[in-house]
Length: 119
Image 1 (spheres, one colour):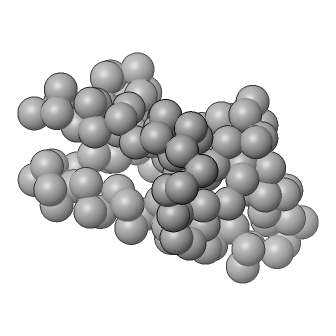
Image 2 (cartoon, rainbow, N blue to C red; image 1 turned 180 degrees about the horizontal axis):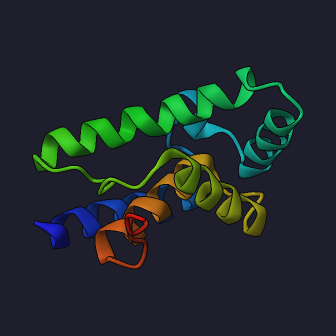
Image 3 (tube, rainbow, N blue to C red; image 1 turned 180 degrees about the vertical axis):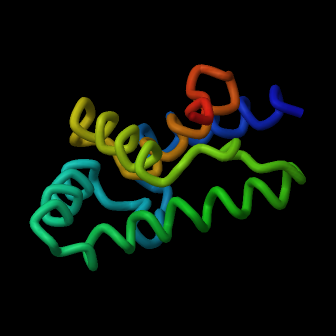
């Protein structure tokens, strides 16, 4: 099952970045640089902008979880997810936010990104 999910997550990433004819809706169609700006604004107390990005990522993750009948986020906490999304977007500011989410989900599915161990 993980192989199917990894293939799905990796398949969308190049399509979104390589095909200008693909219509992305919502925050997933915004450039990563705008997510970085939203994350920076959140640290200044303006969380309303980043909320649309996190809602978009949560919606896509929920859809994939329903299709896979499994938690595709594997119990990873919100702050870690935000950190990893911002890290990707800082590295690739001209890619779409959808690419950041696809990369994050692929890293989780491959086991590269694990939930923090309980204290």
